[in-house]
Length: 130
Image (cartoon, rainbow, N blue to C red; front, side, top):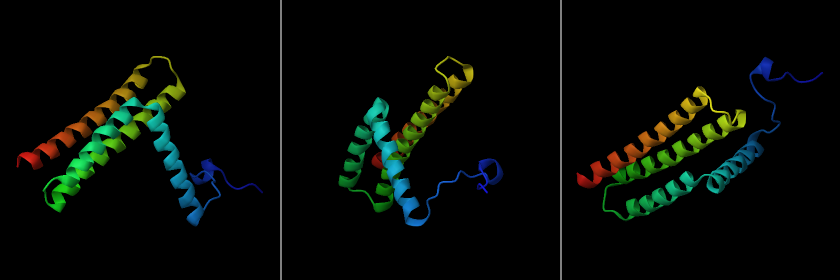
């Protein structure tokens, strides 16, 4: 008898458990990171910007909490860009036709990244300017 499908369980059968599942998750994450790096200019630009900021944050004479906050907002911005790129990929996969809902989804992803960058600027300015 076949195992129940996603309609019955709400889950897709993957057959991986324990350490195997963790290992495959790491491989999928690596693939996603490489895909973003290879295909998304905005991700590469942000990686360069935030890579520089991470180095600067480690060199600055600030307390550990301030440094952690400066690093965290950089990672949040990179995370937001990965999600934005994923949204764009899914929308483009569905259809390349112009559609108001597609535009809305892409614009919202862009707005999320803008907010993340504003957060980076605000946190860094607050810490550096006192």
